[in-house]
Amino acid sequence: MDRTINVRFFSIENFEGDQTSFADCLRQAARPNLSDREVEIEEGIVIRLERLRAIAPSMLAGQFVRIQSENLPPRAIRGRHLETLGVPSIGHTAAFRYDVARSTIALQLGHNGITAARLSMYMQSLLTVEGFRILPVITDDAWEKLGSGRVRKIMLRIARPQELHAAVPEHRSVRSGFQAMKEAAQTTYVEVSLGMGHADTDISTNRVRRMFEWLIHERSEERAGISKLAAVIRDDATDETEVLTFLDAHMGERTKLTLPDDPDRAYRIIDQYITAVLAKRRREINARRP
Image (cartoon, rainbow, N blue to C red; front, side, top):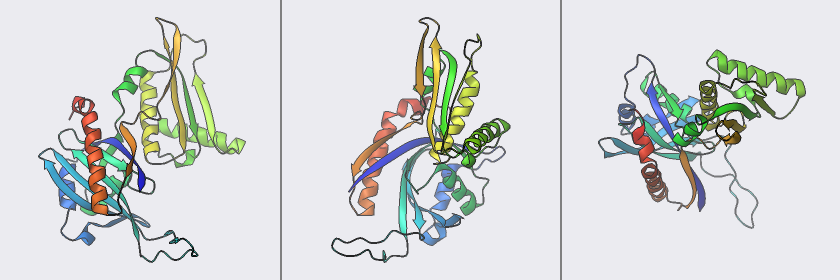
């Protein structure tokens, strides 16, 4: 069975005033009875910590599963009509490795599976903690390129702006603007270019960074249908411009693996891949402040 494995890195921070350790939460969640680990974080979305082990004092490895018991696909057998699947639920798995020292998790993402927001909600519900701020880790290369020249234009394409989670006024303005344009034109998506034209002043790099960090996070949560996120920068030395795309700026790797049907063997193969991705990104991870 070939399967695309998408691994992305997230930083994990406590909410202000909460000193709860994410590593301790993982250990507490690994209760002896599997049923005691299960939480329905939203209607129809049940999450469970499937497995956890310590690789080293500063490295934990494990797997989450989302248990789906509604809208199950039918069973298809060659030469026969479709049949009821015959099981009460199926599982969408997400392997991970958590670097305790750097508060960084390498998390397997997948359609209908575990997202950063669901992971935080799971810990909050299971252990009655405040939850965690889990944010995408952006590649050093992306930020270095953004800061290497003058930002002259940004380009965005969003299909479902109403889904954007906007916690601050700056984000709410973006959401309402996209919503208004889409509703007025009755289109399936909105694509805009925002630039400075011939003005001497540039777009604030800090503003662009804040906006892009937010939209990259929303995209990692499969919200809003974000399909373009780019900036045009100008190099004063050469007077040349470059288009930087940020859709792939979320640190991680993607590959296709041949996986067996056995869930334990499949997990070990995915865990080996995550280990290799961690090794490849180790320099960037170590450069992050703990």
